[in-house]
Image (cartoon, rainbow, N blue to C red):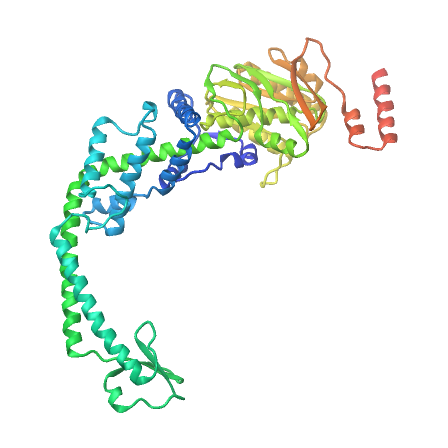
Length: 521
């Protein structure tokens, strides 16, 4: 998002931890940004993709586990495709990854086959995928493994069998001499075919030493191995020659595969990107399921029906309380929320900001219904201090100055603006800022404790009503927004709130006397 509220974004960072499965999905996540005005069609297509995934899984819940399994096992082709660009063939493991990718890709396509909206291939590309699979699997049945013994070259198979026979004969000859020497030395060799001889051991007979080679020596022991015989040398060299011949044939086969598969390099890269998009959408859908998200629709104004804040709702549940959803509507206008301290104004702002954020980033949102436009930025300005040393008031003004000069279309939320300065100047600034927002038709929501702000012409005013109701399994916490009538006064419930929180009664009674005397004046 061009500009965003760092604090609120940090607070809900947990909601952005989506369960990506593939390397392509991780690459797609790195490019993640908010949808901007003008991208409504792309935004809605992304949301429809998630909706279609949900419908498929609702009809057949096995699809979810199948998709998870295939996406998690899908290898990354970046390395081999980069090699092909510079005409390098890659090794057997690279070709195994290629085959595993195309087989896994084919399986994912079959999982999605009944949903044309989620299709990952055109008809022409489907034929090309079949050609690649046929190239990498000359013999039936189709498997995910890869070996040059799978019918790519009869000559390779002949050379491989010949080498296996020669190596078995050579190792058998050496192993026979090793066993005989172990008997004569009275010691077994280690896994490397070496014998350790310490200074406490008897000396090795001279006739046996002639058949051994000193490999290394320390102050405590000497390490020996068999001296190679002429016959062993001949057989070893023959094995090396056969191994070189086999490698030459392997390179010839791989070059042939490269020539047949390289023309599809661009499509293979494209298919990987599509897998990344699918994985990314699938992850967002699974994450939004945890808060029972619904698809937000495009609308000219913000409309939230029964919206919830997933993290606040979860925290209240831990306390045995139930979060009652919030409904709110806002056009290209300024709305001012008033209510007592701890009356839920900040919860409402955070809930609306969170829903706007989630929607802008292509999530289903925690609400029964939601529609809104795309904003260039969403900014929630709260009482805060910054590392630059600014006071809470200075921080608010700095953030506000930045967003008010932005030429782009944004959504501004201000929580108890100017509470950190003296009341007279705070009230004057609040009125001036509210009038500015009304004049410039800013989509904005302000909460305030300054009664003077209620006189701003052209704004919409709402009163916050909140209360807790006992339930069998705890309490419900109700936050309700009620339109204010003209001339209605700002609620004054600070003393009652302090009483509920346990402030000493003599202080509260003194405060009530002082308040009454000021009213009489």
